[in-house]
Amino acid sequence: MTTRLDDKLNLIYQDVLHRNPGETEFHQAVLEVLETLGPVVGKYPEFADKKIIQRICEPERQIIFRVPWQDDNGEIHINRAFRVEFNSALGPYKGGMRFHPSVYLGIVKFLGFEQIFKNALTGLPIGGGKGGSDFNPKGRSDDEIMRFCQSLMTELYRHIGENTDVPAGDIGVGSREIGYLFGQYKRITNRYESGVLTGKGLGWGGSRARTEATGYGVVFFTEEVLKTRNDSLDGKTLVVSGSGNVATYAIEKAHEKGAKVIACSDSGGIIIHERGIDLELLKQIKQKERRRISAYTEYHKDARYVENGDIWSIPCDIAMPCATQNELNGKDAKTLIENGCIAVIEGANMPSTPEAIQLLQEANLIYAPGKAANAGGVATSGLEMQQNAIRDSWSFDYTERRLEEIMVDIHRNCYETAAEFGCEHNYMLGANIAGFLRVADAMTALGVI
Ligand code: GLU
Image (cartoon, rainbow, N blue to C red; front, top):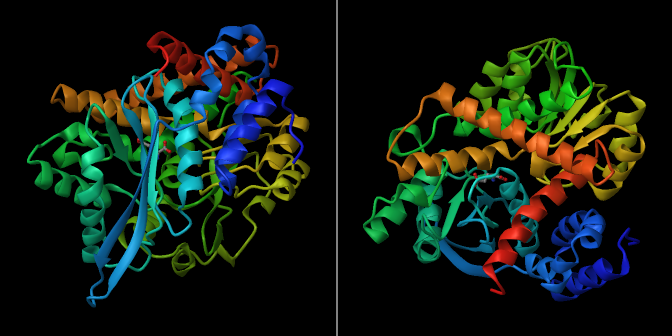
């Protein structure tokens, strides 16, 4: 693959390829950052002397372990779990756990690497980490999920702590799983250490607005983007991929702001509802009943379900990929451009392929990367840690206001950083450089460690 790297950065990238064979998603995430760091290396040669970039690309610690568990029929299963503690220059490692059959070291490392910059952008004292397992929660009973979580925590507990590493949710891990993980941590350690995990339930140390935070944050970020063009969400048509936590609350907030979301999806297909997605129904199907979105058409005869449908072929003003990595490719980008879409704002982590990003930027669409636009989730995890530390519980409105302030700040920081480096409106460059500078300054101050 040809890159847009200068010689020095290319050497670093070649080394990453060599040291991490086969981890394609990790290579992609690193390349995406390195391609925007050229101007920084020129401006701050001290970072090269201190090998800051090489150090950032190598996780501080990588933990891989076996998770044996028994299903409801007594059969034994063996899964593999990971925790990659990537960078703790700014605070304890922080990042979610993902349960999905596609999880392997390369996925966890790409997520952990992105998390460093995302967490730095929040302005909060949190480092970057990520974990997960190739466990497939689909079709598993509540008891099976509990046994799996307990087995996983029986190893993970020795590596985490409120001042060490603070996991949370991601794909396949919500408050039910966090509950089982927290219960086992508490049992093994005999400590009610609320701050060891975030995304907890409201009755036992969780933060209000944490569930909604990622999706709401994406919409707050979008509003800020549109403001720079004297525009707003009012009257806009949106397509949001996914139907999990991020998508659901992005739809909720977008509707509140006067936009209309006409499509969403799951791994089986897409729902198109020109009148606007019925959010209460979506929540009922996905959250309460834990069913597939195809059930939506049982209730709305004017909605369409398209199995394996192509969600990016639906004309819209703004596209919000909120499902998973590499879900929006070059072909999709071309279709969005042809259909007059003005912005792609990422709710998921790395949902656009490098080819898609290049096409969107060349066509002058607004492109906002996940590490900036979806940072509201982890930011509110940071607020949950604050509440746990002072044994307090804030109101929904107050917490949401803090979240909004953080998203406004992240947007401003990305926008101004891009402008400072002569690339106005390039949110990818602004996010990468602003996040990098905060981490690099801390790493420099902490010495060679
Ligand atoms: N998994 C989420 C993310 O990608 C949230 C992590 C957290 O709250 O620690 O940022």
